[in-house]
Each structure stands twice: as structure tokens, then as C-alpha cells.
Image (cartoon, rainbow, N blue to C red; front, side, top):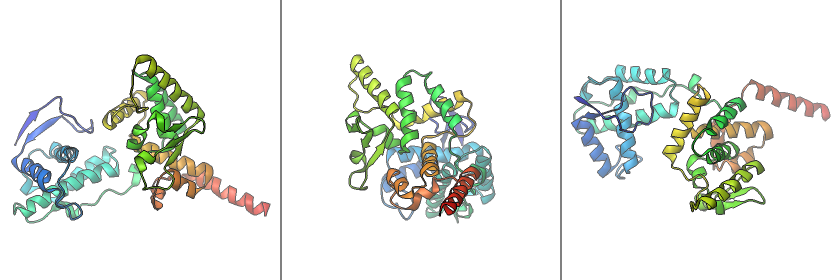
Length: 318
């Protein structure tokens, strides 16, 4: 197995040591198989994979190779996988990140088992790490302020600040936030119509943004007109680039925790629940169809004590 250094190769996480491709016939054959026939998992079998899925799967499997470069696939044991997961966990990766890597490896080993190159799949004995210290911790007010300051030093400070404000004020998923167009915004009411994104899947496809953010969006629209920019989207950036910006601002702000777009959804849900205690509105504004919102609310001691005192005050009033 030979490493070929490719300095320009995209890496979805800079903590992985080295940017390189692997000359690996089994891995290449697996990627080709997934491209034609889909993933070797019951829920997706037979559905050809997209180009993005192929890239992600190769990068995730390469991540394991970065940790264990010299072991043939047929000789990989549970111990190596557990050591690998432990390493990822100590590096501070989220449970979702680790789960995605294990999912890719499990599909790959399923493929090797079906070809008769392995007797069993070692990933089946590996569990995702427990939440522990790796649980998503919402951004504090100070961390958000530092991110805002860092965003204003970039090439497009006005757009960058709007990007952070929209994520923080709405809790939208990154794809939803980036798809917002000027024409979807009711500047009088401060309401964004997301029916173009949500379709008929949600009865209340709206979100609300502050007057201060609306004023910034109006300023951006005027700026774009003066520059002759005819972009329809307010933020006008791709998901990957948005992630790169967040990581850049995280480093500039000196924030130690991993900052990503979905962390703002956790922050919004926690803050909304803390201030309103309204689970119905939380579910509707978060566009959740079930009680998934519970995973996004992270109560701390202050929130619990505050709720207890609020309850006691209402008993006293009765």
C-alpha cells in the first residue's frame, strides 16, 4: 500500500494528520460498487450513491487509514477499531462525526464479507462513544459575540454578520439558511417564508428574524444593487464554504469547542426553551415533526433552578 501526497486534496477535517490518497484496489473497487449499486446497508441497498456520498465515504475510510496505515483490510481487528474510535473521541470529535466514519467502515467491511475476503464485520462489535464530554454544548453569549467580531474582519463583513445572525436567531438548518432569498422576506413583519424549501411537509414553514438583522439585510441588498450583483440568495455561499468560514472565525475568536452550523440549532433551541418554556412554538419554529427537539435542548443547572423557582412562585401566587 502506497501513500501519494496530494497537497490540494480536500479534507473535511484538518485534525486528520496529512492530506493523502491511498492506492488501494479493495477501496477503489468498493467505491465503484457503491457508485453503481448503492450502499451495503439494508435501508439503502440498490440505490446508486451520489458523487458527494462517494467523496465522503472515501474520506472517512481514509481517516482510518491515516491512523492504521500498514494493516491489510483482511487483518483489521476489533482492537484496532476501538483504538481508532478512542483516538477520535480524545481529539474532541462529535458523536455524529464518529458515527459517520463507523457507518462508512461498516459498509466497506460488509462489502469485503460478501466478497469472501473477510469472515465477519469487526464494526458490528463497535459502539458509538457515549455522550460524555462530547455532547453538543450550546454557544455562550460571549462565544457568539467573539464570533461576530471575528466575522467582521473578513472580505464580506456585512454578509458574514447576517449569516451568523440568521443561524443564531432562527435555528435553521444550514441548507435552509443559505437558500433564503430576498423575495422570501416580509420586511414589515420580519417573517421569512420557507415554503419554497419546506413545500407541503410542514404546516408552518416560517421563521422570524430581528429588526436589526432585517436592517442589515436591507443594507446588503442596496450594496448588491450598487455593485451590479444580481444574486437572488441573501447569503450567496455554498455549504462547504460556510463551514470553512465558521472554522476560521472559531480560530480567530480563540474558541476551543468545535463550532459548526448545526451547533447554532442546538444553541437556538436551548435558548428559546429557556426563555419561553413553550414546546409547541419550539417544535413549530424548529420545523420538527416529532419530539426530536428534545435532543437539541441542553438544560444546565441555571435553567433547572430557574424553572424550579418559577414553579414555586406560581404556587405562591395560587
